[in-house]
Length: 296
Image 1 (tube, one colour):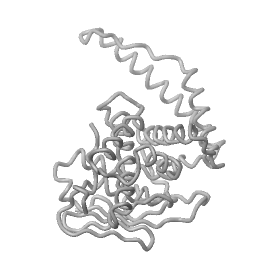
Image 2 (image 1 turned 135 degrees about the vertical axis):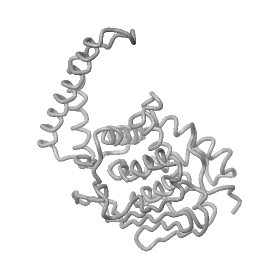
Image 3 (image 1 turned 180 degrees about the vertical axis):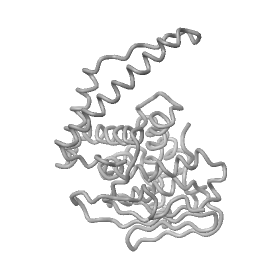
């Protein structure tokens, strides 16, 4: 069974204005063979995989940025850096999914928790690491492209959702061909996750004094306007705490919330028609193992 293929809806892509050389990526993952390719760089593994499909896809999303080590093979130093980059991005994606998509946690600050996990990764799991945890984080933040990884996040989300809903996901076959300029479609909840991922990465980069590109600046202007819209939205009528309370009151509260969501969506659509945003419409050795498990 192919979980992903070029013909699936999520693989339909738009072509935004190019700001960097286009990367052509290939993801083929199965119980016996796993292939990760970025342009002419190919990593292939035989036999039972030691990592999750979503983790290996994170390697390719790192590759799409163009300036960070991504290949899960090679000399120990480059392998360590590639795994650091993929595991940090994977933890950011996964924790954001938990908070925004799956609702299993309530902490929206996923990046901070992921960074704490990476200190363990550097100091224990992959020790001795080539550089300090602080230096690795600085490199990641300097060269990660929030604009690219947030747009490609829907590819990860499709795989992660499949992993969460199918006990036999490791026996499935995944295949996806995409580029660094893809804009896969995503539902509203996935879009909110993209928004969160982009903003967290940009916050760290701004703290480091890194300047936004013109495309990112347009995204930030849209997000600021969305914040203003949300701040002026009338709060919904709270639902009674008593589980046996009046049903009519509960239905009225739900209807009020739905009406506000529709109103906000209409306002967002109006904004999107005025400002072209790259997130619009986005809507997928001495080392003990290749990758660390995702932090709880």
